[in-house]
Image: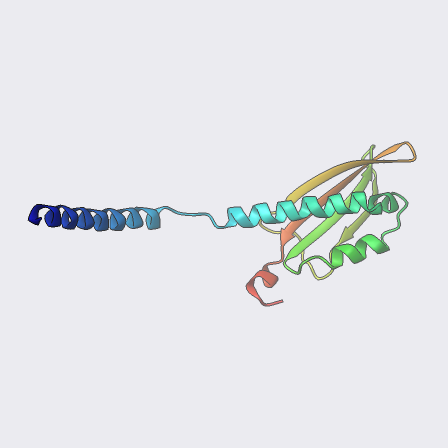
Length: 140
């Protein structure tokens, strides 16, 4: 009986020390929180460009009709900034749209591209995305 009590006490103390050791090790490892943030804006950009494509808005941009697309981009979440550039296959600019109240790109920006066809011509839609730092800090 006495031997079992000593064994359980020894095991609990060992478990306590192991837990303390692991928590010290874990807290000293640098964890990049922006990795999740980065994947979030990248996924959001892919979704936005896919929605513009599936909704037919990219085809409107090929005809230089930007009003509907500008409205959609302006309704995106506040912390995201976008710049959409559509060019033809020769690299000539067709249209550009930038989300209102967003400053120019700074530290990081993310690019998503999509090709689409209209009237036998190839167009490239390139969506740049970055964070509005003021919105992230709650200043905007």
